[in-house]
Image (cartoon, rainbow, N blue to C red):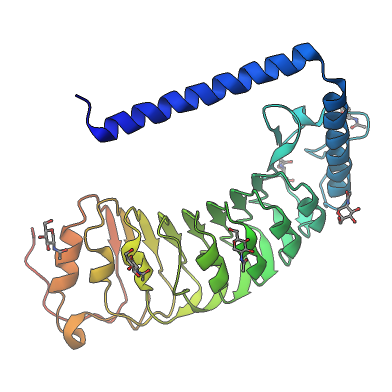
Length: 313
Ligand SMILES: *[C@@H]1O[C@H](CO)[C@@H](O)[C@H](O)[C@H]1NC(C)=O
Ligand SMILES: *[C@@H]1O[C@H](CO)[C@@H](O)[C@H](O)[C@H]1NC(C)=O
Ligand SMILES: *[C@@H]1O[C@H](CO)[C@@H](O)[C@H](O)[C@H]1NC(C)=O
Ligand SMILES: *[C@@H]1O[C@H](CO)[C@@H](O)[C@H](O)[C@H]1NC(C)=O
Ligand SMILES: *[C@@H]1O[C@H](CO)[C@@H](O)[C@H](O)[C@H]1NC(C)=O
Ligand SMILES: *[C@@H]1O[C@H](CO)[C@@H](O)[C@H](O)[C@H]1NC(C)=O
C-alpha cells in the first residue's frame, strides 16, 4: 500500500496532467471554432501592450547600437521581441528580461501598465533615481530584480501589494531608509530577499513570511536584533547580515534544527555577543553542529567572548 504522502503526490501529478490536458483540448477547440471575437480581443490587448512597450522604450536611455532595436513600430508580434516573454496563449506579456543592457536613466513608471507581468529583470544596468511606486500595480509579479544599479530613495512600502512576490532582489544600489515592515508582513510568498549592499537603516521587520529561504541584508546600516520569525523559517538556506550594526546574542535559537542552512554570515556586527553575558559560546556551537548542511559560517569582528568548544563537536 502506498503511504498517504505518496498517494497525495500521485494525485497531485494526475490532477496537473488533467488540467494541462483540458487546457490543451480547450485551446484546440477554441482554434477550430475560430472564435474571431476572442482573437480580435487578443490582438487588441497585445497592440495595447506593444504601445506600452514602445512608450517604455522611449523613456529608457539606451546606448547605440541598442539591444532593443527590434522594439519598433514595424515589428509584428511582440511576443518574439528581445527580452519579452508571453503567456502560452500569446495573449499577454508576462516577462521582461532587460538585465545587462547598458540602460541608464530612471525606471520608467509606465512599466506599471504591463499589469500581467510575472517577472521583471532590469538588473545590472545603470538605472538611477527612485523606484517608481507604479511597479506595485504589477499585482501578479513573482520575480523582481533591480539589483546592481544606482537606484536611490526608499523601498516603496506599496510593494506590500505584491502578494505573489517570491524573489525580490534590490542588491547593490544606494537605497536608504527602512525596510518597510508591511512588505515583509504581507508578502507571504517571499522566498528570496536580497537587499545587500545598500544604505538601509532601522530594524529588520518583526513579522515575515516563513517561506523565506534566503535573507541577504549584508552591508547596510541595520540596527537592533535578528527577528525571531527566522526561527520559523524551516527551510532557511542562507542568512547574511554581515556589515551592519546589529546588537544581539549569537543566534543559537534561530538556527537550531535548520537542516537546510548552508550559509550563515554574521561578520562585522560589532555588538554581537555570546550567551550568558558574553561568556558562553557553547549554545551557539551546539546549534551549529546540529545544522547538518552548514558550509560556511562567517563571524569575524563580532565581540563574542567565551571558551571555544572542543574541535570535532
Ligand atoms: C499607462 O496607464 C496610465 C494610467 O492608466 C495611462 O494614463 C497611460 O496612458 C498609460 N500609458 C500607456 C503607454 O499605455
Ligand atoms: C524593427 O524591428 C525589426 C524586427 O522586428 C527589424 O528587422 C528592423 O530592423 C527594426 N527596424 C529598425 C528601424 O531598427
Ligand atoms: C554595453 O556597453 C559595453 C561598453 O560600451 C559594450 O561592450 C557591451 O557590448 C554593451 N552591452 C550591450 C548588451 O549592449
Ligand atoms: C496585503 O495583500 C493583500 C492581498 O494578499 C492585499 O489585498 C492588501 O491590499 C495588502 N495590504 C497592504 C497593506 O498592502
Ligand atoms: C512561529 O510559529 C509558531 C507556530 O505557528 C507561532 O505560534 C509563532 O508566533 C511564530 N513565531 C513568530 C516569531 O512568528
Ligand atoms: C540537536 O539535535 C538533537 C537531536 O535532533 C536534539 O536532541 C538537540 O536538542 C539539538 N540541540 C540543539 C542545540 O539544537
